[in-house]
Amino acid sequence: MAQDKRDGRTRPSGAGQDRFEPFADDASVRSIGALSFENGTDRIVLHGSLDLTRDEAGLAQARRLRETLEAIVRALEAGDLPEAVAEAPEPKPKTVRNPFA
Image 1 (cartoon, rainbow, N blue to C red):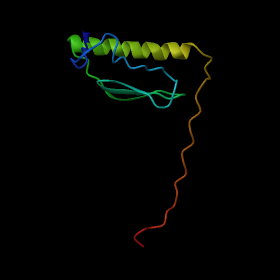
Image 2 (cartoon, helix red, strand yellow):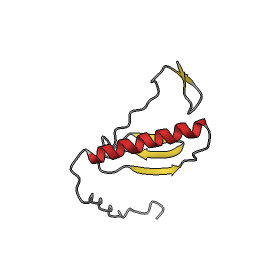
Image 3 (cartoon, rainbow, N blue to C red):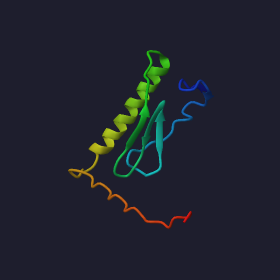
Image 4 (cartoon, one colour):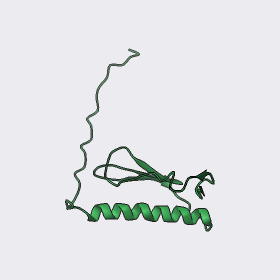
């Protein structure tokens, strides 16, 4: 058993390690503090913020951030990349009947 420095709970060694494979799906999310990495097959979107404090918890979060960014860089370096990813077209607005008329 090992204590998880992120939340203080005791877990078996290796437990709680979420798998985040960059660009592998459109559903997985990795969160570090209030910073979220939302996975996608053509882009990874970051939302939120992260306070890296000068303590053991801050060090653990900094290492997790580094591991996540290194995994993203490895995934990008592993394949042939287009010059740019095409932006998805904006959906056309739909006109709906006024339910109060």
